[in-house]
Amino acid sequence: MPRKIAAGNWKMNGMKSSLSELRILEDKHGDADIAILICPPFTLISACEDTPFDIGGQDCHTAEAGAHTGDISAEMLADAGASYVLTGHSERRTDHGETDALVAAKSQAAYNAGLIAVICIGETLEEREAGQTLDVIDRQLSGSVPQSADALTTVIAYEPVWAIGTGKVPTTEQIAQVHAHIRTRLQSRFDDGAEFSLLYGGSVKGSNAADIFAVPNVDGALVGGASLKAADFSPIIAALESV
Ligand code: PGA
Image 1 (spheres, rainbow, N blue to C red):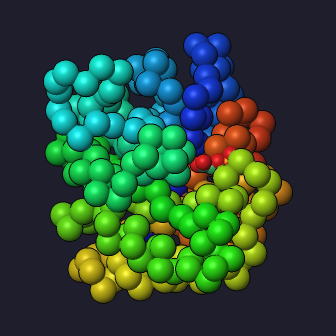
Image 2 (cartoon, rainbow, N blue to C red):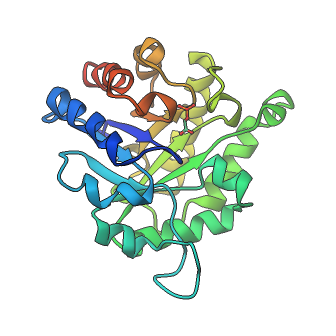
């Protein structure tokens, strides 16, 4: 069975004072038997080490170390206490021109450092309206997921770009179609393709989480805005715990 994961992506949000939200979550979900992953900004990773949650970076460089001002390596994330890293988030692809090849190289760098890569894929609204969703998914899966991937080292997050931070959510049928497609592709490429955790991301909230988690092949969520406050993230975690 794929592992169930409730993942929070804090993006460029979070100060030291935000750690109090994690203490509230810890009181409620500290011994949950699903994985709870928090991806805070780099500045807070070390400070999260004493929480019971899995901690992830939001990006990493392809190299272990070197002259790359402002970047961070997967080794550094691991050293700071992270066990996961997001790669290929659509905001990285858009803001920093990240290509599938670069995302694959970053994911490989994550594996080399012993991190689990959460590889993010998803179509834009234009691509969906042009009927290209599954083609985009295929291109991103084959270009962004290294051949060395397996279910222990890799999580796939399907995040339609048009659903991120917009309050717009695909129908459960649309999510089901894409997740089934991803599962099929992973199974034909990897021996343990049935075991990869597949997350849905894009405007997940307490009010829609249970419906999304009931969709076949959805093993959890990657949550942005609603992961910042314990009061918003807790019902999402609870919905996943009760699937
Ligand atoms: P959102 O972001 O939940 O705020 O839509 C999701 C994400 O970008 O991972």
